[in-house]
Length: 229
Image (tube, rainbow, N blue to C red; front, side, top):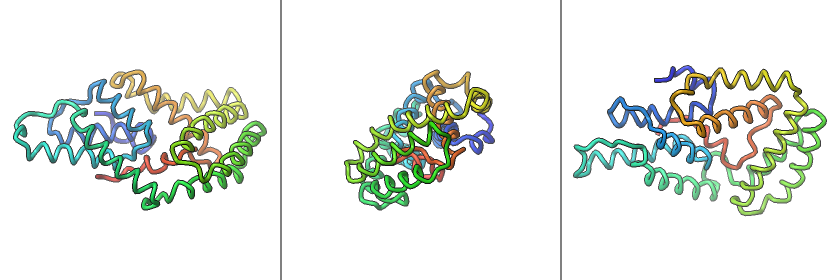
């Protein structure tokens, strides 16, 4: 298994690694995840499902299996848990929409992002983009969360491009080498699309964190919760 030390160094890799370790330990079988399983975890990560919610869904699915008539048959794939993870995800989304999660309501999250963008110390290109994004985002505070989330994806991409321009070639190469070094042990175990997503997410997080900025997402902060189910 990949060294646990990596989980503490990169939240993006930790999300995938923790799902694998939890599923393998609960299943009671030394087999690791298949390519299809990794792609399923990638789907949950891209949807912003918190790690603790994924683990709860997996636990519910395997607990149900343990008390079913087919309990003597091994669960061979993480896909077996997909329905329960979706149920747990839907419960989480409803609670979030009602402001019952620690992250607060979507409107509060939007305003916190606006404040962060307005107060960040950035280079010339990123400052210009951040002001534009903050102004547009403030006007969207009452919009449906699904629409705001879709808009934030593109806004973050625009801001990341500006941050990269301000950083310069040498800093960009240093950051990419740092991320590639962390992800090296995963290269032979994960399918290309999963590794690419982890790399992109890790680069984005590090670029933004260097300027005291969070990910531009209504859900991403919650999805990095590493608490157990």
